[in-house]
Image (cartoon, rainbow, N blue to C red):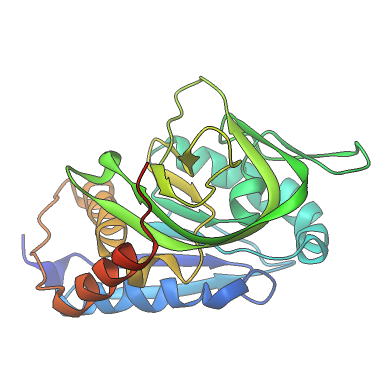
Length: 251
């Protein structure tokens, strides 16, 4: 099947509220990597009060935001968009959620006060506010994306996220940095084709393997076709390897 007959649609949820550390760059990366392969990519956005039909959507992106932004969108997300999003994700819709977006897809977020904000429960995971922020650069190994694949990025979060056991696995295993909680060396989460991560920077320009993983699964879901021509990625991987050399730590 020709790439030009395989258009895709990407939905960016709450771009006006969730866009820390250049997370919008993830949209630019997906658009460009599709364009290089002659895959038409339509980008739609939806924010507070907008009605969403996930039927035509092939990839969803949810960025990170502060506690204030998360509180603003909570009711809208929980009641109107969230249930439909969970249903679509259970049917293998590829999804990338970063930081605050990642936390909203878990079971709950527990604040320092003990108050719990319920999440959508797509991920069998929960987040608890910690006493300090986990800040810095991350280098992690991501076998879920393929052999010898590494991820790099920048994290800045006070929440500590813990994964359960119900059909969920970490996106990566931390070599340098903190990851989900600073203790178990896990970073992010994968459930079906939904991904959560704390990596900003933004994450996809630095990690083309993750971008292509999302595109490939979108093609499989929509067309039953995983043909995705390889790209040279000379400069992308040069930047990626430069970060690994700077921030990897032994042990």
